[in-house]
Amino acid sequence: MLLLQLAIILISSKIAGSLSVRLGQPSVLGKLLIGILLGPSVLGVVNETKTLAEFSQIGVILLMFIAGLETDVDEFKRTGKASTFVGFGGIIVPLVLGYFAGSIFHFSMMQSWFLGLLLSATSVSISVQALKEMNQLKTPEGATILGAAVIDDVVVIIALAFLMSFAGGEVNLTAVILKKVLFFAGAILVGWKAVPWFLKKFALLKVTETVISSALIICFVYAYLAEYTGVAAIIGAYIAGVAISVTDYKHEVFEKVETISYSIFVPIFFTSIGITAEFTGISQNLGLIALFSILAILTKLIGAAIGAKAAGFGWNSSLGIGSAMISRGEVALIIASIGLESKLLSQTMFAVMVVVVLVTTIVTPPLMKLFFKAKTQKETRDTRN
Image (cartoon, rainbow, N blue to C red; front, side, top):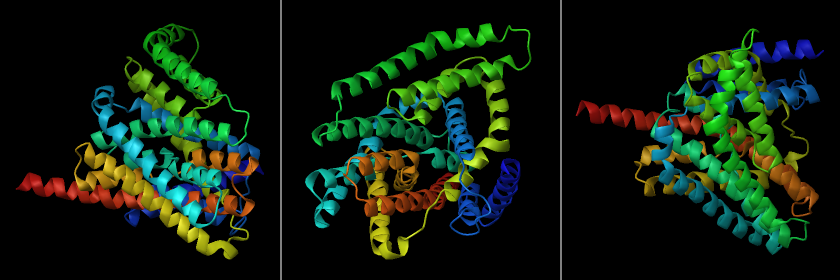
């Protein structure tokens, strides 16, 4: 059954992606929507399984690894200020307005802050694919988005630990922060000294494809250690890609990882998002879903865009950056699950926020297309003048 499901997912995602491009949208939008169509919520042709979930996890890790390989380190350094502004702008506005929204619905103070924190999360795995398709990944905007995503992930997780310590959870805030500091310090040191050495030594082994194997080992170890220390696995994979991007093996690794990833794992990741969508019982909460979807989209778009504008980007670029930060993805789902377990989210609000996360994921690619297209057209007009 698994083999048939894989075949259905691959053929459907490729055709849907192609149709999406023909309609002027990023291919990822078609892959997300076909997942919903194939999943149990509509046709029920493909069901969520543990194996598919693991394939999907590998897909998102490889996607962010590729983004790291394509990162221009010098550009990344130059956009540090902009990434900081975008990251914090995209946290503060959703956090504050989410808190006020919770207060309006008579949530407790802790529940309201948790809601704001949940809305502050971001996951740019979907945005990375859209940036690649629009040739924007290696631009200052692309570097800013990736840098802001790292900042967002770290700050939100630390803030979550801080909140949970007040909510009565057994959380050692000092240990949480120390683990993250140790991860990033270790990741940078190992990336600087050990990664080039490991690639060089492993390449000498008398077996086939040693370079790509060594690169994948580095990717998966970084992703595991990131997850172990409370940082998202995709951030670890991204840092691993950046570490390899400054070595002589960059191009060989990129070409082969891209082939492996886009032939099977990445399409499964995009389609699985739609397959896992759960719409049971949402008809009773359509008003809440609409309200919180609008809140989630606008707060992240406006907050991150203001940060980008303050860092010196034009309005079209700022809105493009803001739209890329909208998707909440797996990071928000993890936080929502923590909220449900700790009684900071009711079962109803948990169901609502799961659909809201899906909505933010679906609207991100077309919004990015809209704003980055406007940016490109403006640049073309300015060049002609």
